Length: 389
Image (cartoon, rainbow, N blue to C red; front, top):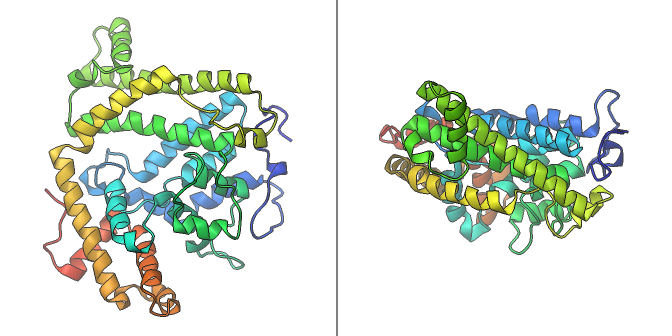
């Protein structure tokens, strides 16, 4: 037992186990095994060539889904250490949280969701569950990774309870393994969610500056960042422009992490949860930003939306990426035999049901990397398919 853990932390010895029972490892806890299985998953490796904001081929310095996931895991472990939580569980959830993303980032997801509307839509969180519970096919005794209940719950609910219009993939799995979708997730999963916010708010500014979509002078007047730059200028008045930028963003990163830790510690002290179950039934997340910092972050997000996510060059790239996803989806729906041989068995099991075939096409297409999607589109439709602007 981890004697230094908080009473409301998730403990391996108290895990609800796996859908398919397994003997425990002599050397690793169940949450460590979850993390390791995720790292060794094919879907995790493919994140290396999947877009964060910029299309993967645009430059070696921009974040991809893989580097983003690693950054999220690093932040999550830091916060978990401060709050007395289980670092392996939060790391597993952090590393798996984007496994379900399509090629071309949110652009690809939006396009595939629109195409799948007649068949139940597409949601990357639900797709992540489908990947780790069925689409990874490596083990002799089961499909998927056979992760613990706590890890699956964290992937499904790290952004909060899942209620209302629940994605089909998540509903189907939940029917055989109840993840209690209407409650909050563990504190470890909540940490992973906030760490995602911290990571992308920081690195999207960094990547936007590198891409020239805005300049340092544009962000020095934004909330939080203004104070970070002022502190650097006071401490290092003759610093070069690049180092000045890096030092300011370091401080911005630290401000976000410290705010989550301090705010969460106060809220946890107030609510006094006595177990992981108390966290799930608290009625609100116990890991969060302070209201003031959250308000400042919304100003920064609006700035990024206007100057980065809706920049003309990014919008043009989105349009081209959307076209590729649409062309591929329609081609496979019109002629499913174009799918690779290993996917043909799933098509045959569909019994010519259009919705089932669409699900197979969606699973295959969403698993593509940016470069493979472009390459496949070129093979099917000719050399006119290109993302280069």
